Length: 143
Image 1: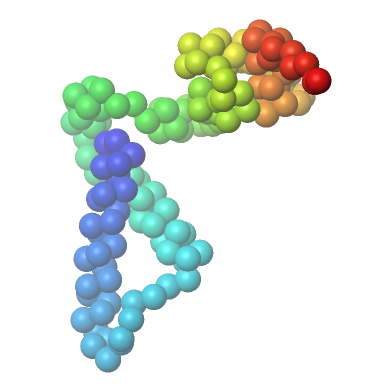
Image 2: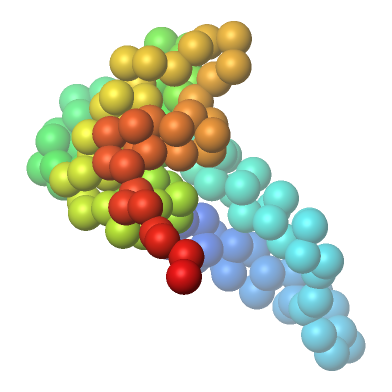
């Protein structure tokens, strides 16, 4: 199941949940929750749905669905191996260096992956340093 499908399913489930709650309290005039609770509830609903599918839907249909969609949820795949990853994209490079093309930004990312230090990590300074090394910005002359 893709992330967008998972979110849509959680939204539909929460809509049904709130219809039941509201039917028990017809005198309520709003259905407001704090933003913090709203975000937590949505995340918990999505996690509960994933767990339910994992525990109750046979593996073969889940694999067929993933293969058919062509969509891979990297974090779900890593979860099966009890691993995590932080993902950086070309848009992150272009936030630091908007002058770089997509291909140049990809080159920066791949070089960052090769050069990052696990003590310091993969961060904005690394991106900026590698980008400046690979693609120096032209010198500007002040008059």
